[in-house]
Length: 184
Image 1 (cartoon, rainbow, N blue to C red):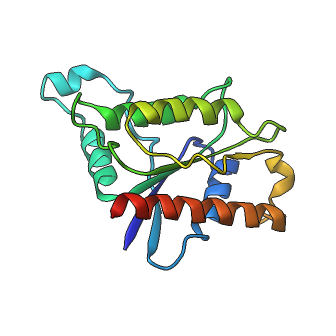
Image 2 (tube, rainbow, N blue to C red):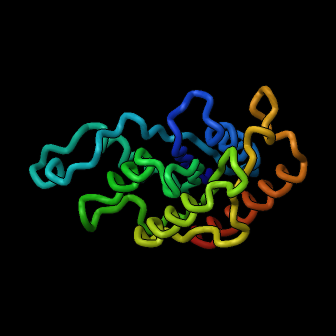
């Protein structure tokens, strides 16, 4: 069983990112299991905890969960033309201490979303820059910028546009192919 960890860059209960992520999680084929990995309880990263052998329990739990997964799907909104602080912090926690990054070599895919037309373009590209530094191979094409999310989802949180569902399926299929490439 291939395990996909899903990290969502929004903490809101009714987050559009969470709803998009739930739709995408259902598109993975048999043999792939997705799980949401919570990041809201992670204290802000402070290198002193690692340097002084006083590692926060939340850091250890998070790092161990990431070690157990085979690939990562990031679904995020855009905050101020970048990624939300909570997502950046999770990436920092997992990348430390230096030389012990839990992200190294894990295939990744990024979906950014926005109620506006741009679909979180800035967040998507900033996140690509970060995960490149973390040595994570990432789905290059198709790029997934999901705009106008308020009109995209029905009252139960399901994507109601069949063209979008087909696009998301092709995105998942490409991600699965990338994962297979790195499992061989």
